[in-house]
Length: 227
Image 1 (tube, helix red, strand yellow):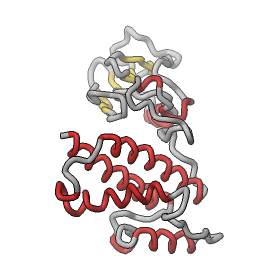
Image 2: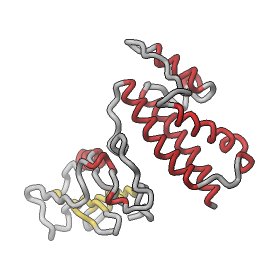
Image 3: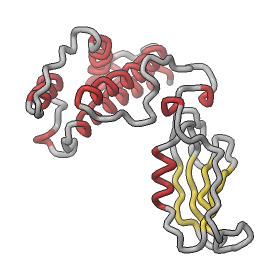
Image 4: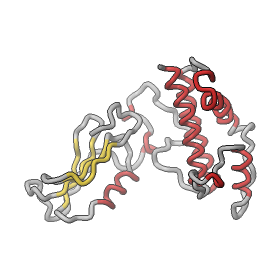
């Protein structure tokens, strides 16, 4: 099981990097004519050269990209040979692949001038692989945590039509914003997701009559993503 999970993690780490490259360059990963997968580094460098101003090629066999290239080489037999690509890879390989994927994504985004998403850890920070997720550098160590509560004027906790926007913490407890009936809560959800400073289990929006949004979030550190 550990070998299976490791092979899956290494492949997923590379897939996340490929997807980040497509999105950063404005490419559609579902359009075969825009896919970078076959001959990846050659195609990526071609796209970088087409930018305005053009960007120089990445030498994936030289620092700082060479470590990530080794992950790619490990991933290749896993993707194409299944268990035949190595039945018992080490768990440390999975940890390293996830860490190197974040570094590679950050380097690529910086290269093309795109701000990295908040879920990327601080550059150079170490992962607390066996520690508490709440002590990690999740979201760069900044942004909103999970304890904020906001009550919009005229919203009352005892009113059954009051809309509750609940942040579900890892222990299942809810911290709720309160809004009057008919309030447009969707921008607030986006604000919360973009500003997370700690992993959470999910977001719920509801009143006493119905649930408007049930959004479980599978985050590192949440053993059970369902709220």
